[in-house]
Length: 379
Ligand code: UDP
Image (tube, rainbow, N blue to C red):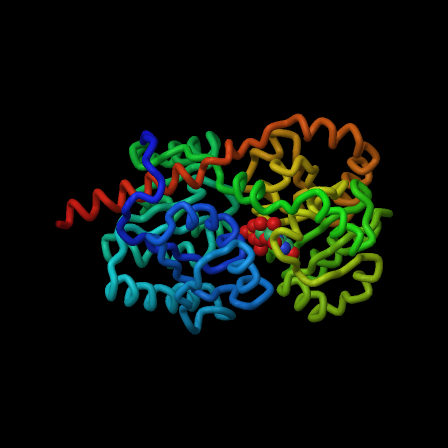
């Protein structure tokens, strides 16, 4: 699929953007800005609170979304069913020219099924990611969405190859880059603000570890969570740990509070603050998908505490490595921290594999073309 240069802010049919979690708000923000008044936001409420949504809507300057009800806190099938019902009603009351979803969450799948049920063109942002780990619900979500999408926006050549291996027709697929590049560039606070930020936490540039964990494989059992926390606690470096609500609940449920003693535990922080802290960390430790991409734009090393990754690019480019929680995490972290200066110099000279910062402009243009063609067809 080719990308032509379209004038910005062209008249566009309404584009429904369905989202429900923090990473979707982050990654879709630049696309929503590109779409301007054509964008209609529908938030499923999967993560709906001030720390995980409200603050991000304001910080990323997003319009107030229409909020679905009764979704958050339910098991996966209930979340999808409740969202699907309400999205169907919303799309029937006012039919959009296209529906955009991003990534692999339950909101992604619900938005995709709702578009499919009404024959509305479907755009999948971040198509073609594969962990090949069938134990992850996210893997099933992304595979299902890719196979019903009309426009698949693949961020990298690896993602294109995954789609081609599953025989997804090439004419539905576009290589766009990942919107994370532009969102990090826009969101990173200026140098002076970053100095103040580090001061606030008593941290020295290149002298601390920033860690986040929240995935089921690290939080669903006391053994796994205990291994991650013990690994972090033994690094001999200050460790700043913005704790995800799911992780906090698991620490309390398993009685692991004592393992937090050596860590600087804080509430989840806003996006600019997270980027500012990540920008000067000697090491990032995370199981997050987004952080695996952000580290390549920020030029920081990352240990990914996961069995598998659907984002091999950061590993291939030398930014990241997969580690098991506990012993391997501690050993790798010690080795990487001993080599911080040369590693940071090398990474600063390595380009991000996620594109050139114009993914959202490309995706917006292709989405508007798709929606406009649909409108002409229906007229
Ligand atoms: N993030 C944030 N504040 C925090 C921790 C993470 O803004 O305290 C951002 C992070 O930069 C990334 C996103 O949240 O862009 C990742 O969200 P999460 O780890 O929940 O989801 P995933 O990326 O794993 O899907």
